[in-house]
Amino acid sequence: MKEKAITKIVLYSVAIILLLGILLPGIGIGSLRLDLKSSEREYCIGPGSVDAQLVKDLNIEWFAGNIQIVTANTNSISFSENNSDGDPMAYYLEGETLTIRYRKPSVSIGFFTEVPKTLTVTVPRFWNCNHLSLEINSADICVDSLIAEDVALHSASGEGKFVSCSIASLEINTVSGQIDYTGRLKMLDFDTASAD
Image (cartoon, rainbow, N blue to C red; front, side, top):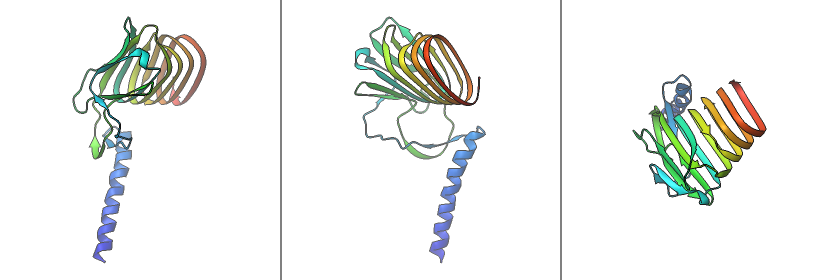
């Protein structure tokens, strides 16, 4: 009888922790960190640079802060963050896809407040990105003078600015925020709950 009672207490405690992890971030108190993406791949930690000829697709997964994607007279794609308090950024190159993450995947249970960090990605001025994927939670993003075939922006909240870009297909899926776009655009797919 005692074993059943103990089992129930443990299960209810886990359920309460998970529910709080879901509810509290909604009111801005913290977040439950449970990142189950494969950590078997070799991540590089911290800022880095990759030869642009090796990269066709760019994936950015960023939890909190700002993202700036700018062009420059360079032959590489470089990236850095302004604040490495806590977990430093991580990245890996797989095939022709460069993935940049807010941090290396981890599994931990508890309540955490994500430290806002600004990610700056610099790409060659005439680099033609095949696919840019932006998975962001609460971040403002500014993309300047990018040439891309396909861009997908998925966010919970934040402001997105695309300045002087040339994009064939832009897909935006956001819960709330504002999107501004200048430049050339062939196709737009915009899905939102409450955004401008």
